[in-house]
Length: 171
Image (cartoon, rainbow, N blue to C red; front, side, top):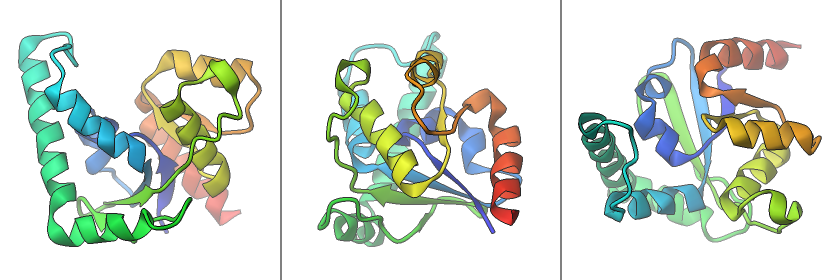
């Protein structure tokens, strides 16, 4: 039994601990966040506060892109992109973690409160009934203030989130 979380692809590159969890985890990633990886690699905007960290994260993003572009993984993603809200077969990224790509659609139900990617993350979490995992405090705050029915965890609480998610599955 594995814990399931909705998150952005870039979170896997920035937070390496997500790829080596102490318990099995499946990450559901909206496809639009995979496309964001390409934008991040070509952007001149710093991703991290220090240059060594920025270079390291850019390298990890490039590695993640290359992994997703491997023929078998690309085939799995392409299969999901044929139908709205389809989920790809799991793509193993480590011994204890899998990634599934979701062809999420932004239907703009939250108006101007959330950008299209945030909306897809929220809708994916609701549709799959899985917690959202993010490092964006502002996003968490806006979700709570808008009383959106989705469970959300800060990445700093990842270990707690895994335990909570597995406990909820056992009930």
